[in-house]
Image 1 (cartoon, rainbow, N blue to C red):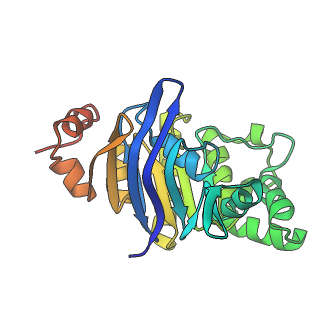
Image 2 (cartoon, rainbow, N blue to C red; image 1 turned 90 degrees about the vertical axis):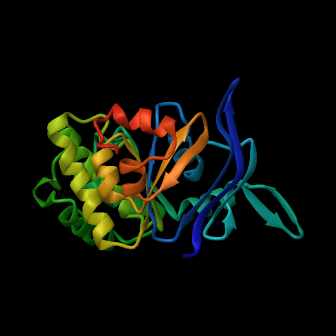
Length: 258
């Protein structure tokens, strides 16, 4: 499997706090990756680096064979300019903990407008794509509602549709159920399950929903203090973790560990 994402000796600090410590990571094209671990272990920072929302202090990141935070100029590799970052950003979509919908736009306008502004699609084409995605996320009857008229789970599904409308090769999900009431969590997770079953898109999800990670992921990575402590198939990580730090973390989630 060809790698679509590679981190090579990447470090990132916020002040005196090192959140990524010489991280090396490869993600295969089409792979579904679940990132688990305690808060502050660096999981979300990985997604934000890929979305070019956070810079890196050292190392290299490549996406689809191209440097992300660097670019080649002749024989040299130098820090990336805004044009390069903008081009690389087109391959990646991200859904955040908070929904970040535009309150003055209807649900379908929230999905339609970015296509017109960024992808330069005609309004009719953008609406047709949005309507298809509302069918996929199960919100055909909510397209003309404003965000305040939608539940948190419905708003998050609109946010997923908006990200998918940009046709990314890679989708990043950052704790997409953490801001939801418990009874709304599964309606969002069911959309992610459908995506995993029906597309070959590369997907990285940061989650504390361990049962979901177990069924969704091709591979699970357990992070602690900016490093990968353990990586493996879901059945290996959740049933037979080899590292004591992983075991103690998972026991907090009532995961059955032999």
